[in-house]
Image (cartoon, rainbow, N blue to C red; front, side, top):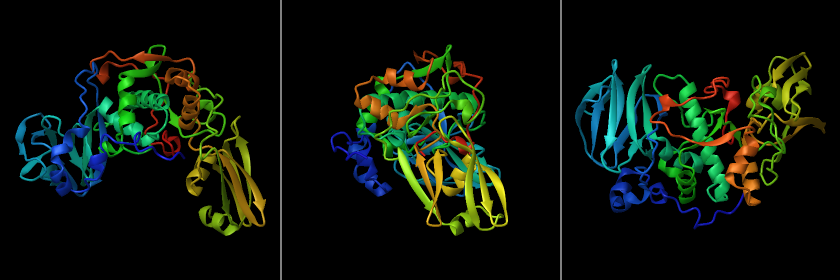
Length: 412
C-alpha cells in the first residue's frame, strides 16, 4: 500500500469527517459548504435509491439546512429545523418522526444541504419507510454525487487519476445496471460489497470528485446496452471468463491478462490446523485432506473434497471461501507439519475490471478508456443521454447479482 499524500488525500469532506456529532457540525457550519459540489451543469438527472439502514428499530435523521418533511405523495407535512436530529421509528403500520406519521416520510434539505442518516452525512434526500417491524432509510441521490463516495470507498484516492476514472465509469455502469435489473420495490442498491461500498460524504476526496466529473455520464455498453460491469480487487495475474465462475458466457466478461502485481493481495497465505478446519467443516470428523476436484482454467477452486476421519463431503469453492474467510477461491493446498497451508492469489471473484490492474496500467500511462476496453472486451465507452433510468437499456442476458453473497463485486 502507498503512503497517502496529504495533498492528494485532502477530502472534499475532510472537515466533515471531524464532525462526529451534531455539536461539531454546528460549530463548523460556516465551512459546511466545502463539500457542496454543483451538479446543475449535468445533463443527467438520474437518481438512485440506496438503502442505508434496513429494518432498524430507530434511525436518527436530519438535515444540515432547514428542510421539509413530505409524505409518499409529495404533500408537505411540515418544516424541519436545521441541525436538529430526530429519531425515526415504526408505530403500527406507519413511520413516526417527531409529530409526523405516514406510510412513508421524505426529508428534503434546502439549498446545498445534506442529510444525516444514522451516523454520517449524505447528498440528496432521505426516504423513511416501514419494512417488517423496523424502519428503513433510503438515500435518494443523484448518481454523480453517489459516485463521489463510491470511488473513494472502492479505490484508493491517491491512485493515478486514470485508474480512478476507470473505477468511476465501472461503478456508474454497475449502478445503472443494478438499478434496472434489481427489481426491488423500494431501493436499487445497498452500501456494501454486495453491490458497491458507499459511505456518504466521509469518503469523498478531491481526486474522486475529479474522476467522476471528468467521466460524467460515461458508461460501458455492448451493442448499445449498459453492461454488467463487475469488478474486483485483484485476480492474481489473470481474470476469469464469466461462465467459468458464475453463469453462461457474456462477450464482454472474458479472461484477460491482469496487471495487478503491485497488489498487496497478489499472493497470500493462510494456515489452519486440522482441529480448526474440523470446527469449520463439521460432520466428517478430524480433517485429514483437502482435495480440489474441479478448477477454472485460471485455477480457481470450483469444488473441494473434504476428507475426514469419519467421512467426506464436497463443497463449492465459493462456500469454502466464505467459511474460511479467504481472499479468493484461487488457492493451492499443501500439508506442512500436520497443518494445512493455503497459498492463494488475488482478492475477489476475478471477473471484469481488476482494481489493482487498473492501478498498474495507469502507472504505465495507460488512459482510462484503454483500461476499460482491456477488462471489458468488445465494449464501447458511451455517453448517457437519457432523461431517466427508465429510459435506459441494459444487457438483458446478464443476471441480477444483488443479494448473491458469492458474487460480491467490490474489493472484498
